[in-house]
Image 1 (cartoon, rainbow, N blue to C red):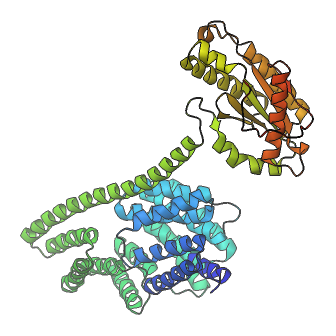
Image 2: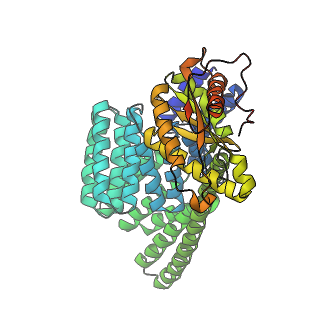
Length: 528
C-alpha cells in the first residue's frame, strides 16, 4: 500500500465509528507496520494513535499515557494541528480513566482550540461532544448542554445519523449521571425518534443508557428487557469496549432488584463480580460491592449488607488511591515528555546565543540568513566593529573590554529593534557584530545604522572606560548587490565597506566601496 492509500485507510479509521474494537486494533497494528515500512513519520504517528486508541478499548492500557503524550508532542513540534487535536482527545480519555476530571477538561479544550478550517465535520462534532462530556464530568452541565446542542446541530446538518446517535447517547448519560432523569428521558426520546426515522439499530452502549434511565425512573420491567437486548447484541459481536459487559450486567441486576427478583439479580451480580476479577476492573468492582450491599438489604439480611458495605468502602478507598497513583503517573509521563522537549529547546537556544552579550551568535546567523536572503531581495546586512578595542583591553583590562562588549551589544540591539523590529543583531566573534535589516534598502539601512553609531559614540562610557571613547565602524551591503544573492557574497561586500570605514578614519558607516581585486573574507578580521 502506498502512502496516499495508507493515509486514506488511516482517515477511515480516524473518522468512522468502529463497533468491533478487537478487529479495529488488529487493523491499526497492520497499518502501523505498513507506515513503518514506508518510513513516513507522519503516517507512523497517525497509525500509532489509532493503535493506542483501539488498544485502550480492548483493555491494553499499560504504557499508553507516555506513548500518547509522545505523539502529541511530535504533532505540536511538526505543526500537525489535526493529529495534535486527536492526541489531546486521547489524553482526555486517559485522564478520564485515571479519574482526573480537571485534566480531562484541559485536554478536551486544547483539542477544540486546535481545530481549524481544515478539520472535517466529523472532527468538529466528535471533539465538541468530548468537550461536552468533560464539562459534564466536572458538573458544568449548562456549559455541557451548549456543546451538546452545537454537536447535535452539526450532525443533523451533515446528516451524520450514527454520530448524532453518539451525541444523544452521551448527552443522556451525563444528564442521568447528574441526577436529571427528566432531561435524560427527553434526550433519549429524540434519540429513539431519530434512530427509527433513519433505520438505525441502537447499539449496546446506547441501549445501556436507555436501560439506566428506565431503571432510575422506576421502569424496571422495561429496563430489564432493554438490558437483555443490550447484552444479546454485545454477545453477537457489537463490542465497544471489553469492560462494557460488566456495566450491562450491573444495570440488569439493578433492574431485577427493582422488580423484586432477588435470585436472578444475584445471578447477574455474580457474573459481574467474576468478570471484574477476571479483567482486573477494580473500579467497577466497587460498584458491584455497593449493589451487593443494597441487594442484601432488600433481602432483609442486614448483617451481610453491613459487611458488604464495609467491603464497598474499603474497595472505594483502594480505587481512589490507585486513581491518585494513575494521575501521578500520567502527570509524570506528560511532565517528562514536556520537560525533555523544553530542555532540548533550551539547549538549542543556548547553542545559538553568545554567552557574554546574550545576542545571537554566528551559528544562529548561519542557520537563519540563507532563507532570509532567498525570500527578501530588499534586505540589508551590516558588520559593525568596535574601534581600537585592543587599546581598551590593553590600557584598562579584559574585564572592562567585556563590559564594553555587553553595552555595545545592548545599544546595537536596542537601536535595531526600534527601527527594524524584524531584524536581529548577532556577535560574530571578538569585537565584531552582524546586523540584519529585513526589507530595508541600503540607503535607509545606512541612515538607521548611522543613528545607532552616534548613539554608541554619545553614550556615557565614563563609569566603564574612565573617559576612554568607544566608537564603532560599520560596513553595509544590500542583498541585491550580488548576483545571485548569497550570504557569503553579501557579507564579503559588507566586510569590504567596513574595511574602508577603518581606512577612512573609523567611527563611520560606509557603503558602495568598489570591489577590490582580491576581496578579503569577512571572517578574517585584523584591523582594530
